[in-house]
Every structure is written in structure tokens, then in C-alpha cells.
Image (cartoon, rainbow, N blue to C red):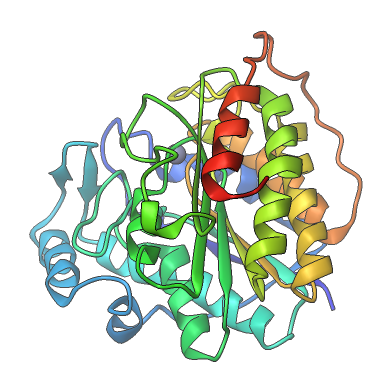
Amino acid sequence: MPALFTWVPSPHHEYPDHPERPGRLTELSARLDSFKAERLTFTPATRDEIARVHSAQMIQTVESASAIGPQIIDFAPTYVTPASFDSALLASGAALGLARAIWAAEAPNGFALVRPPGHHAEPERAMGFCLFNNIAVAAYDLLARGCGRILVVDYDAHHGNGTQESFLHDDRLAYLSTHQWGIYPGTGRIEDAPHAKGRIVNVPLPAYAGDAAFAQISAQVITPMVEKFRPEIILVSAGFDAHWDDPLTSLGVSAAGFYNISKHLVDLAGEHCAGKILFVLEGGYSPRNVAEGASAVFAALTGTRFDDPRDSSPRREADVTGVIESVRAWNGFV
Ligand SMILES: [Zn+2]
């Protein structure tokens, strides 16, 4: 069985001079045929499926704002256009449809290539370029299908406040985020969820943490978390804005770094989850970084070789040993 992908480029969800634009996916679009993966057809998420994560009022707000026409709906700034409500339903449907196929063992693993992204969208509000929380919608759908424990790993450069918020009080859901500290949205402290140590795990990183930090986190935080939580499937919020060449952030990771952490996650899924793992695209604001990052993920998913066409970050990597020790101590991974 080949790996699967879903594709939601949302060409009409666009706002003048906004970085979360259709052009983010143009280089990736040109590469789709080169991945050893098959495209899955799917349907848009229904209101009931979205309502497992978001309140009826929040869904209504996104729908009516979209109907009014192009406008900014929060300070990030997050925007909507007349196409946005349908685009957001399609993006969530693409994540959910792929999650179902993997859970039903119709495919070993997959990657939902979607926009708008989702991980900032909270139960009660759209924010941070995100309308509906695609990965949380997929996770809640799997719970409804009998999955007992789901881990979301989020290596986007920003903290996925929306995913954390929607997982906060459900012991069947775990969340691990690596993110640059001091940037949007301001959440993601190690101590964010004292009632959920070992289940809500935040790794706030200094700028230029780089590939070495991702390698240390893989071995010293992700592995012990998986061994302790024992997920039945791993979902990954893959944001390629952690790339050293991203125009918005400065986390310092290379495409080879994305490959290494993704391969580690695929291997852990192989050991603990019968191979079940789904990646969902989040941020990444350089078309080249998105294409190279996604290529790295597909190489990890399909067991093929990945050669990073560029060198790693030109900046010296920051020492993250202290942060990782604090994360391990707080979460009981020692
Ligand atoms: Zn991001």
C-alpha cells in the first residue's frame, strides 16, 4: 500500500500582501507527481464534524464573516474572503479523510497538504491565519471511531495554542509542541498545563535553536513521551516556518532537520502505533521551504532517501540543554 496525500491549495482564499497565500504551495504543487504517494479524494468536513472542536457560534462567525466579503477578522492578521468558509471545510475534510483512511488501515501513513492552516484556531475563535483546527478535527473524529489515545506533535515554529486549548481536558489526547519563544501567539510555556504534565508538553526554544535542538528533542522528549503515553496513532502539525530561511521566524532548522525529526516520528509510529502516522501542513511562508520540507516528510513516510539541496543554517545553533532538562523534569521524563 502506498502512502496517501490530500491536496487543498485553496486558490481563492487570498488577501492582498498577506503571507498566508496560495503562492506558498506553488513549488510544492509542481512536485506532487514526484512523491511515491497516491492522492486520496475526500469530502469537505461537515458542520457536525467541525463542531466536535469549535462552538456553533464560532462556526457561524467564520461563515457569516466569509459571506460578507474580504476582511480582517483578528490582529494576527487573520482574513476571510467569500471562498474562505468552504476552503476551511475542505482543509479540515482533507485532514479528517486521510486520518480515517489511515485508522482503517487503507494506507500506512499520509500527508494532508492543506491551507488555510489550523493549529492556532481555538474552540471559540479563529486566529493566527487559521480558521478551523484541521488536526484537532481529525483527532476528535478518530476518538469518535474508537481510537483510545492520540498524540499530536507540532513542529511548526509557532505554538499551536488552538490545539493545546482543544486538548486541555481530554486525557485521550496528548500534545507536544516545539516553538520559538517570544513570538506569536505568546503561549507555550513549559508550565502552561500543570494538571496535564506529560500529556501537554511544551518546548519553548530560543531563536536559531536549529537541527541539533530538534535531534535532542527527538531523543530526550519525544521518545519518552511516546513510551509513556502510548498513542495508537501520531498526528503531526508540520509547519515549515521553522526553516532557517523562513521570512517570518528564526528557528534555524534545515530541510534535513525536518527529515530527521519526521523519520524519528515515523519510526516511533512503526514501533508503537502499527505505523499509523499522519502529517498535516501548518505554516511555512517561503514556497521553496514548503516544497523542500514536504519532500523531506514524504521521504520519511515512504522510506526513501532525502538529500537537502541546501546547507544547514548559517547561524550558530543555540544551546538548548537547559530547556530540555527543564521540560524533562516538569513532565516526569527523567
Ligand atoms: Zn507557524
